[in-house]
Length: 192
Image 1 (tube, one colour):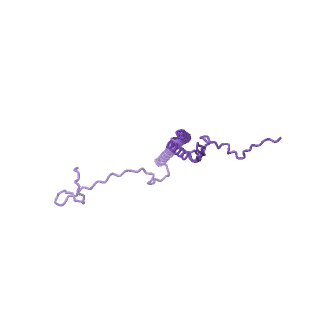
Image 2 (image 1 turned 45 degrees about the vertical axis):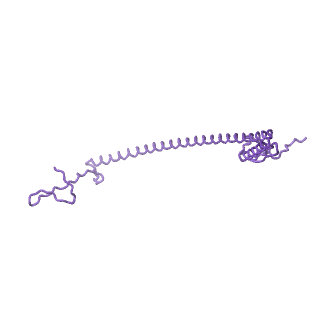
Image 3 (image 1 turned 90 degrees about the horizontal axis):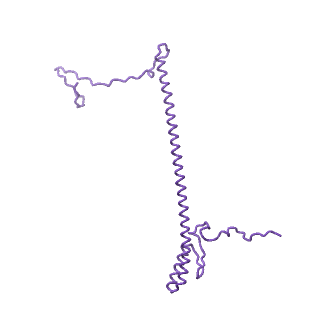
């Protein structure tokens, strides 16, 4: 005997059921609803609107049973939409939480990297500054020796500061008056 094969060639047909377990976008999905007065086709919001219109028509014709039936059908699709909205909100919140966690992780990594770079910069600043100080001390010791054959250059001499310039005192005129000559600056000089 031959083993029996499944008659379904398209395996996707198995998961075509309605509800939120289909995993599709319920908001844009087209439904075929079998209502009391035939099929209603459309997205959930279109189906709800159609059933609400049928319920109003039934109410105007004083058919309370049909009105209740249409309202129940509309309520079913309202529940579908609300569950889909809850699922969508939950997914969005989960995504936002994951994004916040990723951003916090990136911020932590950036802060750690900056700390490491600052520590390396501080370490590199300390190391070169110590070496030139000892190197600068060595030539001075060599120039202090009188037995050395090295010639003193202006760069090796310690720099001395010049005394600030003072204004020369005004010379006495022939009349014997000691009045300072005006050099364009009308600022009074301080007395000595």
